[in-house]
Length: 107
Image (cartoon, rainbow, N blue to C red; front, side):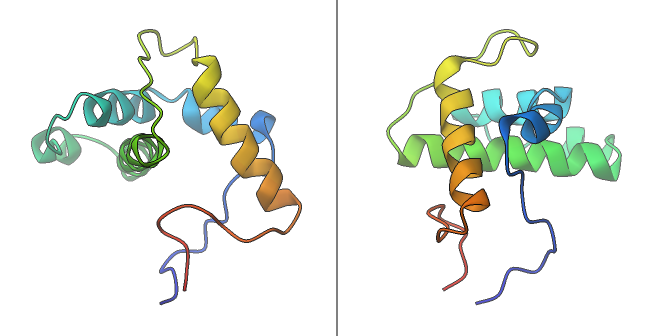
């Protein structure tokens, strides 16, 4: 299976921070961590970029759950340390050229 996008992801926290602090990413992450269903009505009102961020937030929340991380993120501008560490570890693996460990990796 080959991923259908060309987005390779961040290679550092500095480059990931802009996406992670986006309001739609935060909304998607918090909703997924709270087991709320995908909000298609809200998605229709978003720009394409916001839709991507919303979906990214939901996907990362799912990956955190798979890693047994339960993260409560109350303020968008204050990323929890556990989430930042999780993202940073993935970015460092990507930069080092190591294989992906997320559930969406190509097989």
